[in-house]
Length: 124
Image (cartoon, rainbow, N blue to C red; front, side):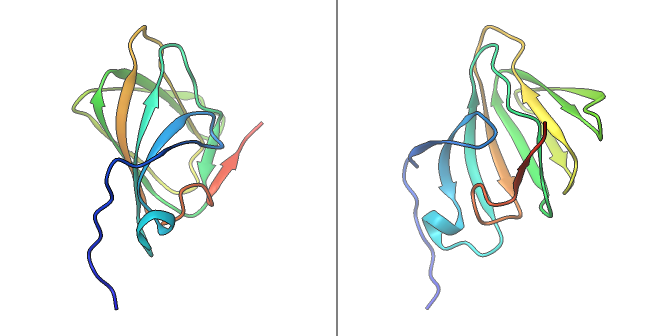
């Protein structure tokens, strides 16, 4: 029988993208079937590896800090994103978030893939 689940203070893990995440809701933690939501921290000067999510959309809400995201087929576009901003990333769009500042960035990430890392495809 399905029921509501409380996930308290998720454990940290290192993602394929090269950043640290705090797990929240996922297939692994809550038995989610279509959703994954966690928190990412991007340290000052850090960058994720370029990647995309094969068939899953992503939504990001920045809790604190300022970040930039390279995106597009050749990562040719740059989007600034700061505390209070939402960012939508369609399925299959290459992207690379990075922190050009001297303060950490914390954001909530939600994806339509219930598995924390399954749909991550790294780029060269």
